[in-house]
Length: 541
Image 1 (cartoon, rainbow, N blue to C red):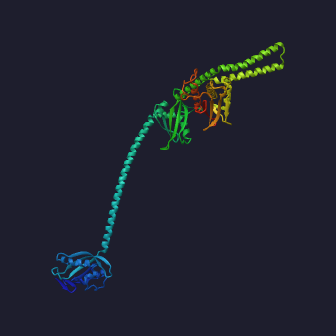
Image 2 (cartoon, rainbow, N blue to C red):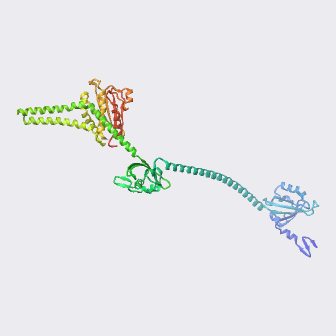
Image 3 (cartoon, rainbow, N blue to C red):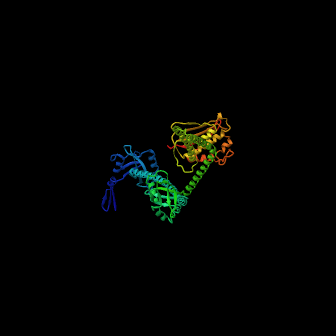
């Protein structure tokens, strides 16, 4: 049976030191009567910073942080019953004024007696609360971080979904674009070839295969390496070698060149090529091939027809000039005949001296040279022999033309006025054709001045520089002028104001000048008469 003594507890003869146990407990323990401290253990004194026994007899108010907490605990004393103890967390105050958090747990020794002492147990929970607060704050920060990360992930997911959709659409558009360009590449009515940086053909389209009579793509690539199909000035070569030379030249912009292709039937085709650089996927260039054989042949036929028409026009001009030329040739020939007749008479009578014979022969030779020069000019003018474009002194050509037209100028009683800028550069031209333009314009000027009084007739010819390395020839007369309705149709074929004209002269002249890279036009003016101007490229260009 237990035996109670002061401060001890006895069980089966063993006395247990409960006061020693309470005093060394790890929690604060105190006995309270009427809210006064009767006894506090060492741990409680340590918690509140008091010496051993210093709290005994004091009101419990000294360990409460505020009056409100003290009153709140007092109101809850009624809740302490036999089956229920009072437990609460409060902020308590130490002797030095510092505060800390404790868990208070109290119970009356005799619950039936309201004045019975109560036992209170106090435990410092500041570290735990601090840790819980840190944990709570950490959880709050974690929740905020998780929320922010969630929002960021949502935005990233939305961005990623949009990017995936964009790339899907771009891939679809790229696929469609590739298919579109693949279709264009295959069906474009041009022969196309794509080569890599080494000049090796990567792809050829069907048009090019048909152009070179290839049975398949493989056959076409084999034909490109055949060194006997491309004709050059030095023999033959392969198309692949020709293309490699252009790629090897560091192709930067569009390059154009031509070559002659020998077909399987032995015919020769003229091929024009346009090369453009490629800067992606290891490709070097794309070549576009166009068979220009028909165009060149048509152009050659047109050139021949233009030459025939120009020749016919020159013959027509010579027909207009025939009577004057006959008169011009008749004068030196008649003079020669007179000298020969006179020489014969003197020789018959024996009165001719050596000086007389020598003088007559010199006169005859001079007149014959004059006739020969006239015939030479006429023969050169009406010749149909092809004349190449060469560097020509335009002033000398004009003087030669005026010599050819001297009979017409004399008959029209017109003395031409030539004004030329000094040191004019030569022009590159077909001299016969440009002379034809000059003759035509000069004859038109003489015709325009038929009704003009002789003293008012003036024919002005100017040679002057133009911009962009061009020379201009201006032919101006003082005739009746050009009505607006006639000027509007001046260069139309078969349009003429002359009773016996064909209406082809000015049209042919314009074609000749344009074939030389120049232009022929009517120059509007306020003065009386008409002015025509045509331009030619200089040999310096």
